[in-house]
Amino acid sequence: GENVEQHPSTLSVQEGDSAVIKCTYSDSASNYFPWYKQELGKRPQLIIDIRSNVGEKKDQRIAVTLNKTAKHFSLHITETQPEDSAVYFCAASRGSYIPTFGRGTSLIVHP
Amino acid sequence: NAGVTQTPKFRILKIGQSMTLQCAQDMNHNYMYWYRQDPGMGLKLIYYSVGAGITDKGEVPNGYNVSRSTTEDFPLRLELAAPSQTSVYFCASSYLAADEETQYFGPGTRLLVL
Image (cartoon, rainbow over all chains, first blue to last red; front, side):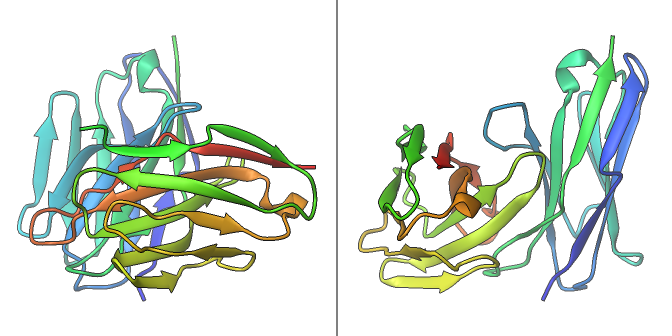
């Protein structure tokens, strides 16, 4: 089955800095890679996703890049703000297979 | 649309008691999932269902049971509650077809077993 590894487990940055979270996956057939944000005490919610036919996708201050050859994808957050503090989960899936989640990254943005 | 709803929001159980966590979705999603999330940890899949009448075990199914009699509802049953089942439980749903894999999560149920 699919195996997703996520690093780092904790990331601490100063407000205004950039943050990068990386995930690797094992199943080369995986073709959908979402990122979820979970604020403290809340449910996980999708913030951005990418499909295997695209190398990069941006949405304002967040972007996701995908390297299919190396089987890794990354979440990039620029100009971080305190409200970006949360746990971020990556996932990988394909077709009708249920998604596999990474273990999560706790992002702390210091004012 | 209400999306994915869960009841109750919080519950305290005594060891050995049983309860059912309710989950419903109104998005006509075919896939539904139950996860547990321990403090500071990731999401662990308990059970999932690919459609009414079909369920399958996830990573941590022991101590739990599920049923899926309708597309909308996916209750999780805890039999003989144990302190190790203290956790936050999230129900989620998705429509696994081309370009529609996003999971939508419910607000969660916090369970404390004493």
